[in-house]
Length: 252
Image (cartoon, rainbow, N blue to C red; front, side, top):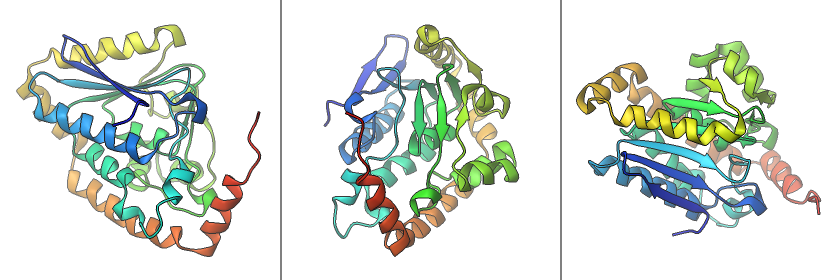
């Protein structure tokens, strides 16, 4: 569906999903969201794929949503987008997910890690969630999941003030399992995914459901966020902020 998402299946039951659109800092288009969603759906339907790893190349994870692609679809609210369909699949995926985060992880690039079972980062990782700054609201159930992870006050700082979180800070908050040298990051993430894939699958699935808790609450947060996102997307303040962002001069 898109050359910017590479799906590689290893013989050890691990599927590697690589985001590769370096000219746009791995910003995600509708086609890329669809490719990622389908890859997760296929993993769940396959008895052979028992873990999934998200990674970005080269040296970056994702700059988040490609706003120009997103806004080029007139009349389509957030509730009818490939982005939200992918986010819903993240919450529903039964296959264990691992993230290997290098460089920038902005917007959905940061919030998708909240749905992963294991997260590893290189020292260059920088997580940022600038939704309010753009006149929007949090997505991917981050308004629910992030306070659970880091507490309401720190989540408020990250979600409302768009504070940048470096790899060590993310590790200290429990958003990252470990900080791994860049040249070892992907190998480490794949190795940990292989360990998950080799576990007794019934026990793994049951334990994962217990650890992750009530999925209905996550989906309720997704629904509430999508409704608020739709309303904000049509607001004058959001349109002003988004247009200003898109009209900024880009580095040569």
